[in-house]
Image: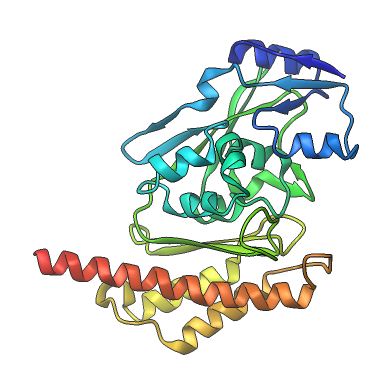
Length: 297
């Protein structure tokens, strides 16, 4: 196994173009596990740790550009206000040591349905910035990024450069079910984001289908219910029947399997419970913010 160590982004793209089968490694929290268990034996490892720009982020007026190697710890500590859903997801990642090393780019590159960041990225409507030496840069909407079990939309000569995520304009939540409280792969996970500016709701489901998915039917139902009931304007509590229907549709969006962490039936049930809870929490936060704003006025 050869070890490639580019010192710049341009060198990294050139190395990937010359060795398309090279496996990128930054935090290494997924790749090294696979290598240690002999589940993977790549011909080349492409070490991206010396590429400084991958560890940087920039908060613009409306969007955060998050370098692929920005560690989860930095997201938790520095971007909680801008990216609350992703910050909550970062809290659930493994241990402090792994949160100090791992980043969103690794989750996206591995594309495991159980990756902790995926539900939050789906709920936020992120875009993935990728590049190749031959074709330059392109943006992939997060909805189009996951193409199969541990497969993504990257071409063989492409690397993930950054993730672009709109700053939260409303409450966001993230919940995860695991067999213990830390150092655990998700049995299932759920992300929810309210977008008052567009009067829409987005969801993200992890570890309950072959890929991370959105519950689009649930979103469409809730968007219509909130609009028809005038809830965005009156700030009233969402009716229990609407919350239950939303949760049922989220559970129906799953296509889980039985494995050592949980049964398919349990995963469906748990996603419904998480959907109900996160909707209740986010809507109460939205109502609190409205009351604060009206009181100040």
